[in-house]
Length: 359
Image (tube, rainbow, N blue to C red; front, side, top):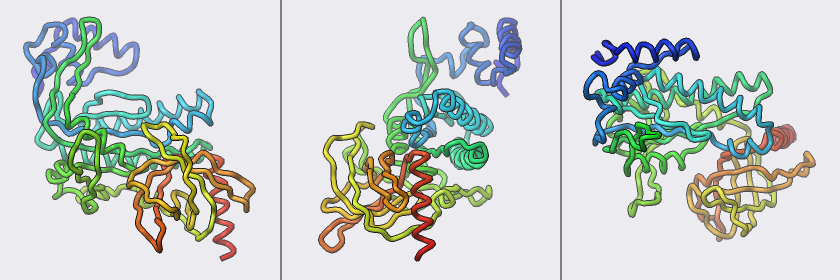
């Protein structure tokens, strides 16, 4: 029970009625508590404390390739796509008792454990993340029937001690969380691929009984002197939930020999120095290349290559390095697409299908 929300002031009731009249929505109990604290009613609350140190599970979700999509679609289509997606994700977060901390362009950050904590915060965060990926799969199925481009999302999750409170000025302030554990959630999210849910080892240890996950992977993140261990969540068997990533990635793969030019990205900026490579097999969602130098795992690349069979040059595909290994004096790297233009995707699929047909 929330004593503040259960006994709102006349001012809070007035604001609630005004909000409902204008938007058709009402404040959540947490929102009503914040309003009461701001207006000086209801006594102390988590919202009225200047700062608190508390354990929070941070869920950070980011749309993959959305920036590239904005270059190929009208503004109206982009806004409609983004709002449609964020509306669905918001519903999932709120249904599981999460707090939407902020929207940041094409990403959303949700909190489980602030402003109010519950014993099952980690469990609810994990279930929420998997259901967010399931919701994206439904959105893509519906969107394909309307001729809309597909959207994919990567999710990173971390649990730890943060500083929570209201930050800002008299003119504007916002309740949020800050600290190293928040930054780590963001770093983990940056390593996630399309349709993937990555969790920190600390989060995994808190929910190992609940989830089916991959073995540990070590990644090097900014601000950490030692490698960070992460795992990919595959399913939550007790809830009958499975991350649809395997279905997203399933496609034919064909062996080829296609020259390819690579450019590395740093902080989303394409570096000017090209690298030459040869594509040795390709599918709808990724490819394998051979080159003279190693690539760092999770490095981001922009690719360009010609598909002579369909008279088309692909120049708007972005990928991450999944793995890289030495092979007969050279290096082989597996890449997974993080973004690809609508026409390039269609031409690539046609190219693969034509080669499958003549095998």
